[in-house]
Amino acid sequence: MNNETKQIPRPEYPRPQFVRENWLNLNGTWQFSFDTPVFDREIIVPFAFQTKLSGIGITERHDVVWYRRTFTLPEAWDGCRIMLHFGAVDYRCRVRVNEEWVGSNTGGQVDFSFDITDAVCAGENTLTVFVEDILSDMTIPRGKQYWKEAESIFYTPTTGIWQTVWLEALPQVHIRNVNITPDLDRRTVTFDYTLSEKDAELEVEVSFKGKLIARERTGALRSSGRMIVDLDKELLGRDNFISVCAWSPKKPNLFDVTFRLWKDGKAADTVRSYFGLRKISIENGVILLNNYPFYQKLLLDQGYWPDSLLTAPADEAFVADIELCKKMGFNGVRKHQKVEDPRFLYHADRMGLVVWSEMANSFEYSVDYVRRFTAEWMETIRRDYNHPCIIAWTPLNESWGVENISSDPRQAHHSCALVELTKSLDGTRLVMSNDGWEHTIPDVIGIHDYDSNKAVLSERYASRESTLAHRPAGRAMFAPGYCSAGQPVMITECGGISFKEDRASAAWGYTDARDIRQFYRLYYDVISSFLDSPVVQGFCYTQLTDVMQEQNGLLTYAHQPKFDCDIIRSINEGRWQPV
Image 1 (spheres, helix red, strand yellow):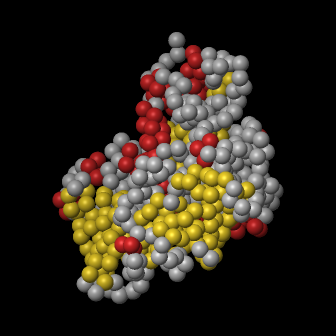
Image 2: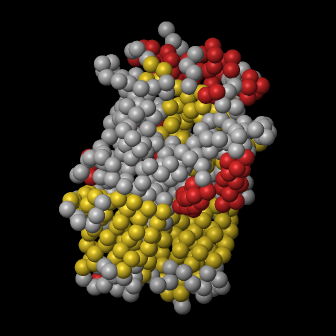
Image 3: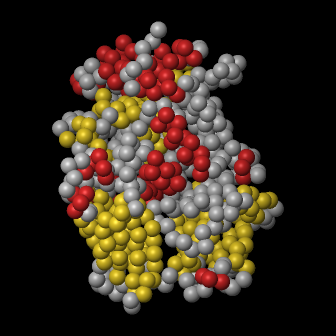
């Protein structure tokens, strides 16, 4: 039962990398209350109470909220395992089904699930969710969510459920997880799988543009294992293999995969997925995509909307943003201080947009912070490992959470540990250590530079020596005891040029443009400086959209273009000259 009733907000399937047919969307109207479970209000899930689309839309602080609703399972689900999934709940929660507490979760950025089979009954069931989000705790990973009134670069917080809640019917014998690792050079794909029990056989079917490429089946051995599939020999023999089959922003080719689990000669479970044959690497200090130099033109994307904050108002909003990014001549985004909805990553996969995935940071360092942050970061990598659009992981930004990294060796070790931990989970992508400044052991030296003077920028990035001598925001390029090892250089935040047609209202940014003509000149000065540099291998412009009081987007807060997209594209491509 694929539930896509249009009256339900965000009705689309929430986990597009691992699709089953039998699911039930629980978004919509829930009972709700602040502080105590009196349930004297209603709220529209999956929107946080601070948003207009929730039906509440107040920003006063409440550290505790309660949710409740009822549901009835389809009769066809009899005999199945029943899974309850939450896309994301910020920050701590406990979940009860009928009279049984079925589980708890800590972490506001990624999904979690509970097997509620033993707690549900025939007929009506009651689901209750308790959420605690203590804004005064500075060790909680929260990103741009502010504990005061929104100001500067900080915004209204998101408390509670903010991504889709849904039920799934699992066969008693089922596929738990599959990590998909393509190898462009060997022209293979590896499937690392976990099953609910042993003595079942996994069949993998791979297709490309409707043509069957491979079908292979494991023997009935253990409950986990690995399968390596060679791609079709007809494809292997082509000289233009990369251009035909590889995934890139220009050609986002995807292979379709069907997993079938067999038990006692019968098909027990079926899951649909996909992958992109894509390689990101560094050779001789040059960033390569599919073994060719890859100049990255990124936008900083914070993923906020005026009526729904961190939650996209509709799936189509993701598509519209990606279309505008590409129309303006960008080939990727750096998702900033937010682990984005898998639906965005799915559209980036199929439309061709590279993504730097970044964790929401804390603001104070402590043992509790390390434990919380590390656990949630590992879950982020686990959830998003299979998305080909992701080419870089960014655990830390501008020393947030490690403010004393230059003087406290523990914090520098934490930065290094995050890099090594990330690579132990995923050896196929670039990993940053502390984006912006005070690096330890990054794959790429990411520099945040909001200067808009072309002469200054051109001189600063004229050589590697002058680049590494720069102190962004007065901070050293590397933390004490660490230094450059020949890594590529990118400007991973820049610009931030403020422009607002209504000049009577406040418009915060790093540089202020008086009119649209001056904006184009300032934008040209910034971007052309990096395009001309013999050192810089890419840039990330701040930012895609205005967000609240921060008015330095290429789009408005309503996600509409503020400028001529063709002019922005021509500047990005080095074709525009000021007059």
